[in-house]
Image 1: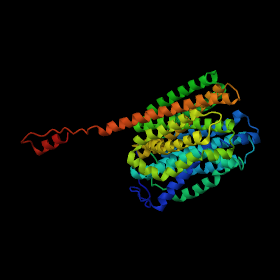
Image 2: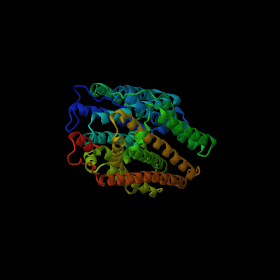
Image 3: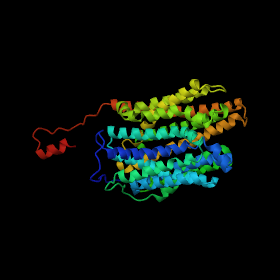
Amino acid sequence: MTTATATSPDAPSTSGLSWTPRLWGTLIVLCAAMFLDALDVSMVGVALPSIGSELHLSTSALQWVVSGYVLGYGGLLLLGGRAADLLGRRRVFLVALGVFAAASLLGGLVDDGGLLIAARFLKGVSAAFTAPAGLSIITTTFAEGPARNRALSIYTTCGASGFSLGLVLSGLLTSVGWRWTFLMPVPVALLALLFAVRLLPRPAEERAKGGYDVLGAITGTATVLLLVFTATEAQGAGWLSLRTVGSLVVVAALAAAFLLVESRTAHPLVRLGIFRNGSVARANVIAFAMAGAYGGFQFVVTLYLQHLLGWSALQMALGLLPAGAFIALSAPFMGPIVDRFGTGRLLPIGLLALVGAFALFLRLDEHSSYLGLVLPSMLLLGLGFALAFPSVNIAATDGVGDEEQGLASGLVNTAIQVGTAVVLAGATAMITAGSAGGDSPQAQLDGYRPALVFVTAVALLGLLIAAVGALVDRRRKSAPVPVPDYDYPPVGSSPARTEVLTNR
């Protein structure tokens, strides 16, 4: 599969680190979209009680206000990534960003719970197309090396900032009114769309060659959608219930069908050979573990601070601010740090900080202080995400051709969203089982601690994989380069004979 890489005559050069204002503008537009995509994963968290009260939604329905977005986002990312490669990254990005703005406006105006959940799902679907399209625009616009590392570090740090600042902004906006958590992204998305039309590069030909893998799209999308749905619903139906087990069996059957289709079709949705790239394969597993552990941790922290310590929405916003602020302020410095130390070194360090943040919170009790428990965890969390999130995205697209950058971007974003849904569902089940339905402080703590052990173990798994990857990379770099074994011609050989022998 090949693709043309010719760009428009006015396309800026990105081989160095001196960028034009137009190029900076392009990166800022893409960062704004990524920030909004990540922000929406967690921004409604603090607003849920207010939403439930005004729209008369049950606890299970409120869960879908969050899960509806994750379902649409995680379920269609592979399709979104491949669509960017086949239909044109710029076109896909612009259309999806417009849909995102419209769905945000709808969510802020509706008075019906079903319509609100539908709007959240639609926003997730649009994010499933903007995220891989935006990431692949960066990886095909900026030359591989320092320029791309710098751009990706800024871009992914903006995503991590949105992910971590979601609860902070949710607390601030909910203190004014829950609808602002839906309406706030609208002007930002429209402004980004306006500038995107003018600034995004117009390549002469940016589409990958090849046909459409319709059967692969159906089986792949159905697999991820059903997996996310099953994990989300399992906490209510029970992990060992007939419904959950049956759904997991269907997920396994769909996954097997998807792999069979992809191995036999001429133009697959996911070329399975991409996973022969060790960096890509490891990065996707690490992304699953890292995002999943954070999603579960964030849920536990939210319940603990609100229900047990009695924090208000504004207190939560201010208390969790250090992590997001640390990540946001680190954005300008991550490119040079990645160039200096490499993703192989930064990933284990970042994941070690995340493991430390989660493990530190195991000391929680009925009277934990902010300075003794919450602040140290938030600082470690900020450090961990600042180092690990850009590194895992760079590693996930490293060594991948331009024609498959959308695919690589879709894969890592899918890993992030599926990891969030699956680990969050597991943590929720542990909270429910541990507390045994009790409302006393001790019962709540008995539920929170097993969930924290679980998310710490998931993060530790990601750390081990990152450490193994760093070791593999070090051995590969230190291995001696083989010297070609040339056959030298005998004395008196003809020139033609000499040319044949010396080029064998």
